[in-house]
Each structure stands twice: as structure tokens, then as C-alpha cells.
Length: 490
Image 1 (cartoon, helix red, strand yellow):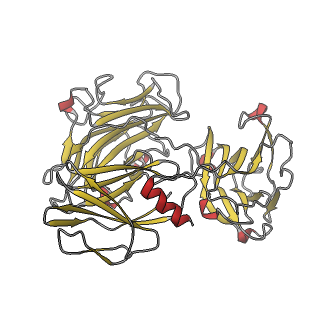
Image 2: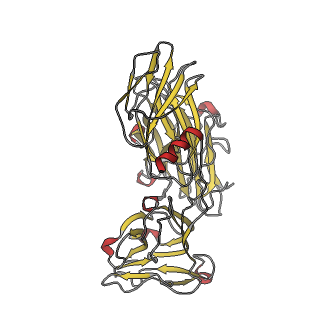
Image 3: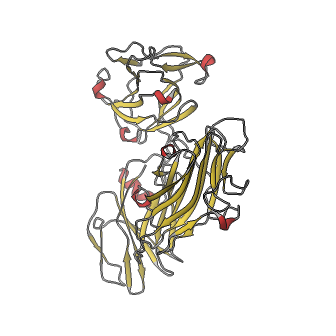
């Protein structure tokens, strides 16, 4: 039935909207830990267990109370599971855990994790870890854990799994289990609308001199408050548009990121320079060289170089910055962009990101200069199929790159597996596709230019389904077949 629904969805844009279903809601306001119908496993040797925190005293939660665990006595190992009542997820097709948390002394954290069991909740061996918190901590944050793999289970237990032996404190509040995915937001909302083509031989490079302190249309600077994600006037992502850079590696301009120079309002800011690049028609690999200046970087979640095709899902290809020598320019060479999980055959975003709490070159900050993206020198006339943002509840983007004016594009798809099968389009010899015989298709879509882009709304109550797809571009007397694509709806 789900495959039928998916077929109708792809062919006609049909979406089933289901009312929200809440399986669990706990705010700890009854003043009990474990709360009613919850349980706890305290492992042998643990001196402390899960307890109750008063929010008015700590500020680490909402309302009056929150759940709380710390080490208790420094040097003694503690391990405990705080376990929900049995949940019935048999009536949902999507499943999420949402909660508010505060992690204090995150550097000393051994384990803050979410685990799932579908059997006896008194045996810790039955719990499978599905999420491990590695956030920087020392701030209130919202956590959303995708549990769609367990949608449909008649009996389900969730556990907040703590391990610690020194300092680490974990506060949790406002626990909700439902079938509603969180709103997806771009961590760096400013994305360029234009993309710089990569030359097949020379690739692309910049030392920022040619821009004279003005951001080109294929670059966007993000200057954000690290906690709220909102624009922050004291964040600093500067190539000269805000002030002449302090210490470029060469020339007069470079990228510098940190808290704004001269600020004494010390707080965490998140900076990111997003560069739009276009590798249409180029064969991998793509590699990256640049000069980097570490003015005192700690290790944070968003420190490094990342790539993305949609601005939502980012894959880090280099970092963190804290591994670089202090207070000197260092050459970083041979970063393999194509080794990431992101399909870079087409348009993509390259991100230099940094999170910090002190001004640039005053205990903190990162400088970048002399960026070079190398291409392999190889080109192809093959068309290339890519699906970006295939996330339930969002609008996916189907792109067929390296097309020609006048092409008619068909996109075949299957939910049951891959062929091969023979397809006859009448204007060329039958083509072999890696799809099951009789698989449906979308199209034809007329093309004008190097690519065809189609939006596709993904229903919010679907996840975990594998889709197989392949594109064919039909042109007079010829048919071009794309790569075979396998993708999972996230």
C-alpha cells in the first residue's frame, strides 16, 4: 500500500495529510524522576542516578523542573538508563523524538545517547543506540531524533543513556514522541543564487583580490548568533565588505571569521562563507587547496569545510580548525571534495564555516586565502541524474544535468529493485536501464539549456523508502541514459 501511495505521489503530486499523533509527552512538572510509568536501570557501581533539577535555580530547562544527571563524585563511573513507558507506534508511519536539553561541561561528557528497545526494558542489552549527542553544550538546545525505522512497532521503549566519570551534566525537558518531523531549516540561510562554472582544465581559484571587498553573486556571507541562528551584527564573515582584512596571506584581501574585531560582548557566533560552484559535464575527482590561519580555534560542530547541494544537508570534508598550528598561515592541500557523500556532478555549495566567541586575531578566529578547486581535466557528454533534499515533509529537487536544448527527458523509477530492463523510445535502439521491467516513469519534460530541474513535494508521513531512478534524454535519432540512482527518503 505504501508503494501504491508513493506511485500516486510521484505521478500526480498526491499527498495524504494525516493528523498529528502524540505517543508521549513529559515535562517533569509533577516533580518526579523517574516520572510516573517510567523506569530506570542503574548499572552496578553507579553512585548517582537520574534526578530532578529545579529550573528556576539552574536555568537549564523550561517550566519548574527538568530531568537531570551528573557524575556526582568525580572519578567514579556512573551509567544509567532513564526509560519511557511502553509506546505503541503501530498506528504511525513516521516517528520522532523531540526534547530540550542542556549539556554542561560537554568536554568531559562520556556518553549522552538515545537508545531504543522493542523487548524487555529491564535488560540494557536489548537497547540499541540510535542517537549520540556530540553538541558543544553549555547552551539550551532542541534535539530531534528520527525514529522512522521504528514506525509501526507495537511495543517500543526509549532510553536516555548516560555515562560519566567527571563533571558532565545532562539536563532534559519537554520530551515528546510523535509522528511530526521538525521544521527543516538551513543552518546557513544566505545561499548564493548564482554558480561559478569550473573550468575543465584550470578549475577555479581566488585570492579575493579581484573582488575588492565586494561579495560576488556566487558568494554569500552568513553572520549568525550560534544559539538562535539569527543574524548577529557582531558575527564576522569578512572578505573586505565590512573592513579591510587584518592579515591576508597574500595581497590585501582574505576571508576572516570570528566575533567582530573590538567586541567585548563575548558570545558564540556562527560564520559561514557559501560559494556556489558548477561542475556540470566534469568528471570527478574535485580537490581543494587553500591557506588557513588559526588564531586560536577551539573545536566546534561547524568548524571546517563542507559541501552541499541543497543547503540543508552538509557533509564535512575538512576540519576542525583546531588541528592547525596557532598564529601562522598553513597550506591545506588535496582535500578530496568528491569523496564526500554529496553528488558534486552539477551545481553545489562549498562552505567555509567557523564558530567562535572572541574577536578575530584576539584569542580566536580563522583566516582563509588563496582557494583553489582543481578538476580532473576530464569531461563527459553523459547526462547525470541527481535528487536533492529527498526529505519527508519537504520539497525535493530532481535535476538532470548535461542536457541539450530540445531534449525530452523521461525519469523512470521503481520501489521494488533494479533491473536490468529494455526500454524502447522509438527514436533510437532500445536502451538498457537498471530498473525493473514495467517500472513507471515521469515525463516527457522538455529541456532548454544544460539542465532540467523539477520540484517534487515529499509527503511528511513517508520516510525510509528506497527509490531507484534513472533518466533518459531523447533527442533526434539519439537517446542518452543517465547514471542509475538509488536514494532513501530521509
